[in-house]
Image (cartoon, rainbow, N blue to C red):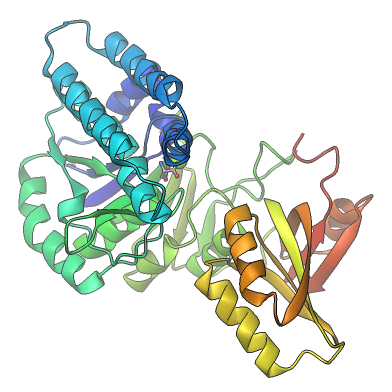
Length: 425
Ligand code: ASP
Ligand code: MG
């Protein structure tokens, strides 16, 4: 069994759908993959927008119409027959979405977010299912919420591994014997059947969960880049592709923010030694990168940028030293308000940490700790990481930047700075 994952860029227009058919129909006929698909193009962002408008009681009809027009335009190109069943399926999806939007109330943001933001993958997977069938590539559409169970940590559902593995390994192999499967990335459901999401860009993780539970032979993530590169080519020039890389190395890169794979993806694969191929959907014959249980020497430095960071500094109100007690209440509050630490540093009377900017969560944190600390913050900032750095790479990247915080270990150099003209260029 093999698992494939196609991201938003690989279903962004009609030509992209045709390309997926081209890739799948080129496989050996005995290979019936389980295919995980993301929402089309930038649909998840558009759904976030429509949801926020509804939540704030604003007029969301314009944004909703844009989502419909975008999907409608592509479907029209792919299915010339007006009575094709895809149109009824689409109609059903739209009316579910409209009902959910009408029901939005101004509380319980994260829970309602999941109900609405998850619709993008339901739409894209149905369109892909019908399109492949129309081309003679018969496949089974699967609602992954019946297989992937999470707790109710909304927007970042935690997998119930025992239940999920049991459910997937019991039911899916027999379906795959008959037909390939098309299913959604990014979403799951609680035991009560409420939809959850796994965190933005979480479709890679979904694919890894399926691969793990199926003991798959491999997982292939199809991307718009030629493989795992040492930097994002949209941000950095002269990138190089790694041919192969060890699990550990890939886990660390994803952790520091390499956007090519979702950070949670590699762990489950490493546990069962399932190789992960990162390949270009535009050049499917090219080798891409394989992430697996290999040994290699020190590899070329990789450059990672996290944008939209906030640097917080906590000062005790009485100029007292930062004690373990203080740290404990800071960590407790960060965890409660779900702000993740990307970097941190302690000094005599202040503690600094760099987190992803989320204004609502930061406000809540400030209120929570207002009695104990004076909290200052600085944003928007960039957090750069160089893995396997050497002197030339370090000099090249820090040159001309105003550095607010830096840290280095034997292999990794990180710094927070103000955005400069050349990033992103
Ligand atoms: N569609 C979701 C997102 O854009 C999940 C994914 O693409 O992996 O975050
Ligand atoms: Mg995506």
